[in-house]
Structures are given as C-alpha cells and as structure tokens.
Picture 1: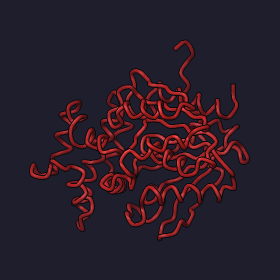
Picture 2 (picture 1 turned 90 degrees about the horizontal axis):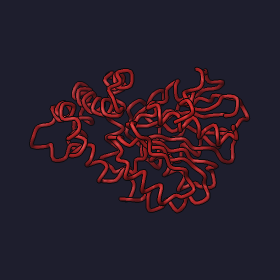
Picture 3 (picture 1 turned 180 degrees about the vertical axis):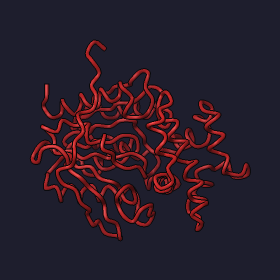
Length: 319
C-alpha cells in the first residue's frame, strides 16, 4: 500500500455515561464520545460476552462523530454480571433501539466486528430504516458450519497445542459436542467449576484471534472475572445458535439493499472463515469489500484497522 496505514485516533474520555434500564432486570452501561450533535454512530462489541474498551472509542474522528458505545447484557459494566436470563440476540437488537431512542437520533452508522458483525446484521435486517451506513469486520453468521469449524474440527488442525488445552477439561466421551459439554460446566452451581471452564474456553479464543501471538490481546481472556462472563454468555448464545434460523442472516441480506457499507475480513481469520464474508459480499453489493492479506481476526491487525479508520472517515464526509 503506497499510503501509510491509518491507526487509532488519540485517547478520549466519554462526555457522558450511564446505565439504561432495559427491563428483565438488566441495566446496560453506555457511554458517548466525540462531539455532541456530530454524526451518530453505535459501536457493537464482540463476543458475545465481550466488553467495550477505551481503544474502541478511538475508531472514529471525535471532531466529526457522536458515538454511543455500550456493554451488552451481562457484560462489562452492565448488570447483573454474567446473567443469562432474558439475554438473546433479539433482546440485544431491542436494546440497540432503546439506546437509539435515548440518544434522540433517527438513524445512525452501525459498526460491529466479529459477534458485533452478527448483531449488526441482525439489527440492520430488522431495522434497515435506522441504519445510514454499516461497517462490519470479521464476518460471523453463526451457522452450524462456523461453530463446528471453531469448536469441533478445523481450527484444531492449525493450533493443536492450544486445542489440547481447550479439550482438556472435557472427558473424551463428551468431546463430540464441545459446545454442549462446556455448557454443562459453565452453568454449574459450583463457581470454581464455572471459572475453570471459562478460562479454558476464553483462552482458546484469545490465543487464536491474531495472526501472530499477541499477549496484550490474549492475556485478558485468562482473567477470572472477564473469562467467567465472556465464556458463559458466548457459550449460551452458541448452544442456542443465536436464536437464529440456520442461514438466516445471509438469507435476509437483501434487506440491506441501499445501505452503503464496508466488509473487512482477514484472509487468515481463524474463528470466522472468510467464506462467509465472501458470501455476504455477493449478497450485499452496496458494500465495499476488503479481504486483508496477512491478517487474522482482531480489529487491531494493522491492515484491518487501516480499512476501518478509512471507512469511518469516509462515511463522515472526510476526504
């Protein structure tokens, strides 16, 4: 690339933050950064079960954007922590609408990566009139093939050392259904059992999302409290196939017609095979498509980050 790679904007603190009661006993933590009255955007974090971080605030030009970021149900600073009750894809889609109404905007740019791309697609296909642009990274459709690739056979062949640690907590007789086997342990009455399983589940993901080992990315996945919420919620969503019909998000991609967007995906993305990104590209011609060579899954991969920053600049009218 002849131009220098773009990187994150400078560190920034929220100008407002709080919790929104979304019902069902859940309170969702939100924060807003940038310039009040700027171009509205919402950031959807990964997982499910992840959390927003200060670096996520820096994906947007603060002089041009008014960005709302939030921790999804049960995650991060949202309460109750690690709660699985009333916590489904469609509860989260409804929460995004509640947050939009709270922000007082008619439509906004939706930005999501990994599970955030899944949630972004679900939201945009249900409420296309509320989305002015859609920026998606690390496309994940939550199909059975994708789940099997990551949790049964596929990525196991690329990372045999890390796979051995992932399967270790599960007796051989249960390993034919790893997601279900982990579900039993992550919903155990015994916290020590849950945490041990959560660390193994989370580290498998944390150590396979970057092209090269990156401890600053993977280490947090091994922290007990983070791993406990992350693994419980992610597994809960995956054992229920995201409450989506098989192939639903790709089937309904026609509802995105007329929405400008960006699809960016790493060639060597392990959790999310590039085939799904390619299929979405074919089904949604309004989006610009970039398959990044020499990149894995994480948004921090240099080539991926460059494209994301260029996209948010472009959609804000910045030349």
